[in-house]
Amino acid sequence: MRRLLLLPVILLAAACGDGRLPQIDLVGEALGTTFKVSVVEPAASLDTAALETDILAALARVDALASTWRDDSEQAVLNAADTTDWVDVSATFCAALADSWAVSRASGGAFDATIGPLVNLWGFGPNGRVVVPPDEAAVADAMQHVGYDKLELDCDNARVRKSDARLFVDLSGWAKGYAVDEVAELLADQQLVNFLVEVGGDMRVSGHNSEARKWAVAIEAPSTSQRAPQSIIRITDTGIATSGDYRNYFEYDGVTYSHTIDPRTGRPVTHDLAAVTVLQASSAFADAMATALLVLGPDDGPELAENLGIAAYFLVRAESGIEEITTNAFEAVLDL
Image 1 (cartoon, helix red, strand yellow):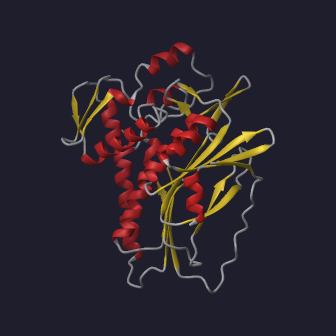
Image 2: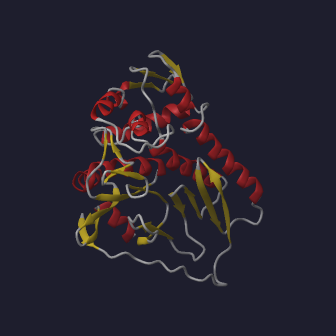
Image 3: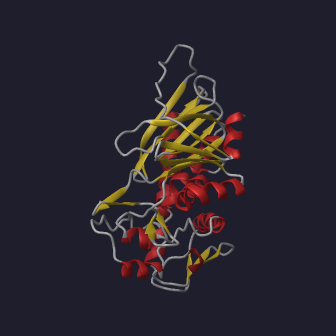
């Protein structure tokens, strides 16, 4: 693992030339955000309209699974179930919870999909924003109803059981990455090889871009005042997700409260780690693990990523600027 200090990089988009390979781009809105799908060298027989319909259907299935903004999603139905009895769920939803729980265990609880009561309490959930931070008593009360170990999974029989009826599941830190994976698998099933899928900033790339090179991905600099790349990497055949604390926050009495909440303390993080990018075959895993590593901070995050062999890239605020930390696995991906 190496540490180095970099200045922000400005990406200048190259003008499209005649030598580029054919590419189709499909863009739209889903899951409360935007999506983009780029396919390079599509077969002449590809029905673009049918492909777009299939993509929208895949995204709609994810929304029906884990939306925090609709009352009929599987997640919302489970949250509304005021019971500690077994609740039947779809096999897909149970598998999603199991994948999420795996990241929770690996990170020592730094990622926890039952963090919903705290997310709502601090004004970053579907209950709406707050302008004053909650008091210690409110945080302590919410903490009583947080903990992934309070939800028992029986995926062999597609059912789950809450030990606390007030448990609130929030898969927001997983859903965008899962949506990317679902669309990417859809494209692969249609024998498409060279593509980029992006949903709300999470991505998965395959093959090459229209220049017959690896896909160029700009990692945003952690700035609240402007959007500019911190660095640009070229990757292929991987998912990528970034978690940062610099876009969604509120200020009160001179203190900034980030939307990144530590499930172990019940409070927004206060360290100097601004953003984490994770490369992994599964975009859903990358999404959840990026959140976990961000919560862990600039010391424990890189240490865990290195120990687990995770390709991760950390941006840390320092007096002299933004410091980068990269794991050996991240360096290996870039050297391929």
